[in-house]
Amino acid sequence: MNLTLIAAMGQNRVIGKNNDLIWHMPKDLQRFKKLTSGHHVIMGRKTYESMGRPLPKRTNIIVTRDKAYKAPGCIIVHDIEAAIQKAEGDAQPFITGGAEIYKLAFPYAKTVELTLIHHHFEGDTFFPEFEDKGWKLVEKETHKPDDKNRYPFDYLTYIRV
Image (cartoon, rainbow, N blue to C red; front, side):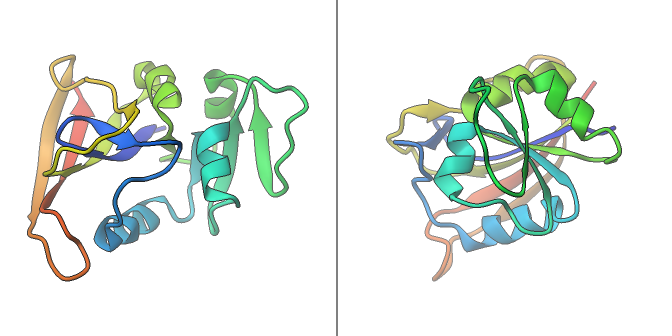
């Protein structure tokens, strides 16, 4: 299993504010959909609730401490290990956030798919630092801003070494 963390962050590691995305980057959303479609996506309750519905064409797994939590069309688990176990048949399940779930999943992850947006954002949620902790950048794709994507950004792929 190639457990993969997937996220978009600003240069200051910000990934959100008030349980929501700060930016609208259609190219990044298209990439997210392309990479995760057909796979298991593992997320925290707050991330799920910010979307308001299961992601289509994916098996949605929600990690929550709330033993009574219900989300139609989703698998509910109560720790990251149970989430990973539920995704066992998938060659590449994805961790989609939020910050606490990323931290919990890092010890199990083999790949990080990161969109680095070249802008400093105000936010209250941050992606964990990891680059100097046994990870190697293996792919980088640079994009300039355009009429639909306001900021320059890079797609970065890291693997555990």
